[in-house]
Image 1 (spheres, one colour):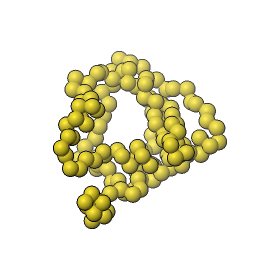
Image 2: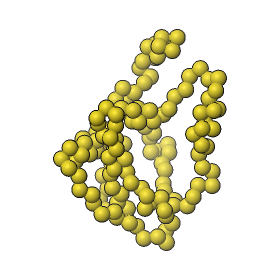
Image 3: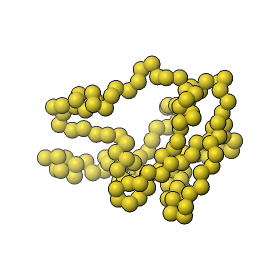
Image 4: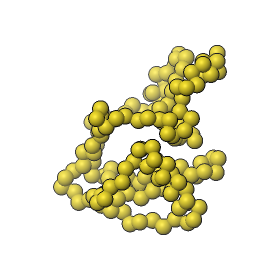
Length: 137
């Protein structure tokens, strides 16, 4: 039943990062609520080996091409890339926002805990994780 449903709706799913269109900035833009009394921090640039540098270059080029990110000329904050090995031998590129997190106020309405979210799906026929493509590919 599930397989048939997925096959019938194959065009709905993203098979590549470019298939994920995103949200038009004219509709919604997220701005960080950074404490203006704090000085911006530029993390010291990390040096990576050839394999990791190549993985970073490929990922940055990919997300630039599909407009997930954009170039900035004079960033106030500079955060390093962190590469995490994936089970398939590839790398997952993450960003170290630890300094930035310290100067943003705590969220008064944090996201629910994952265990509560999963419990709330009990009895559902279908469930989707929006970030599954990037998280598992």
